[in-house]
Length: 319
Image 1 (cartoon, rainbow, N blue to C red):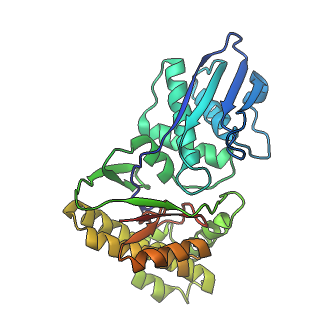
Image 2: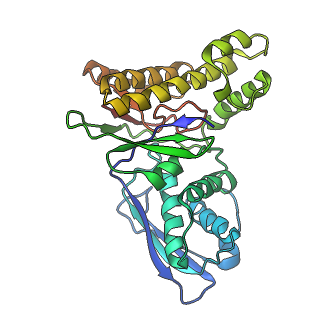
Image 3: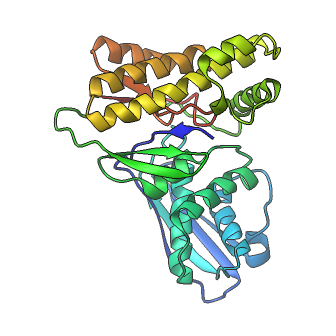
């Protein structure tokens, strides 16, 4: 329930298609991401199977989950044939799953001639991750996909779902995204462990969110609350990111990119040491960037304080 500060990038995912002749048949066509250059993957379901949440989780769960939750809202989703196209790198931490979910929701809106409130759309797509994909993620990626705007960052309050656009129009800086090609998988990674560490800390501290405690209070109460060394490390990262997020938003509003860069470096160090979610390949790139005297941050952890996000991957951002 914290603050996040994502930015829009010039990558996209789109879902295009039309209603099926048979209203009970659903067909999806997607690129063969594991074997680029080979024929696309084609899969067809009958209505009952399309809306049944089977395991294990596959790529089509993100699409079928969106359709199922939209149908639960009382909107009848007709049979369709659709293709997925785009250029968002898969598994690198650039919100590829959120982009697929939001583009699917937008496609279904057009298909059904209806409109879902943008905030509700983002939350619906987040629920797909929870219910259909077994990922207890926050709402940052989905919000960024719904509300992302060129040359803007978005300050999102994940407790109230209120967001504010922050202009980034400096002609003196460039934002460079670098992919080390290290892949991640939220479901299979230590993601859930990090969240569990934070959840147990919240319970022991007798609060509802780590947002409610200051860095000083955390240090004062940690022993009495019987936090384990690991829980304290995770909580320190989360709590201190609160201040960094708000400082970063203020720095961007003032056009103070030097301050922003310093905060980004601090955030990466905290993620590496306290949250332990970096990787060797990423650290090498980070060190190389520092030698070039640029400021950096692991992308998708864009100065956010809460225990949600995408880690152990190979994407980072330089300013």
